[in-house]
Image 1 (cartoon, rainbow, N blue to C red):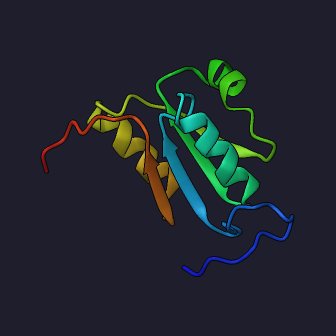
Image 2 (cartoon, rainbow, N blue to C red):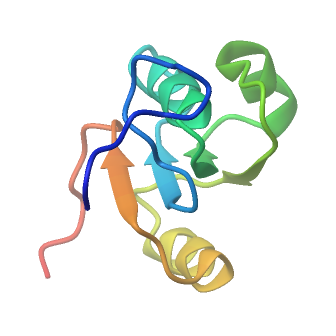
Length: 102
């Protein structure tokens, strides 16, 4: 992936046309990461254990996004999200757990 200036003049690189999944999206690291990715033009897919209405007040991104309520320690929930999302360009895991050993 080449880094180019974002057309909006944002100091961040462009993620235009890229699908980025962010776990822990409503958390202290996830929410600002979501805003940065959104500002850089990414199609963002936000994943958090919190209900969407609660998460929306913490994340506050300007662009539209997809949201999945998911506990990442529940393999079935993670697999359901993965099946719904399809192909991605990047995963930013800010949850801080790695519950699966395979």
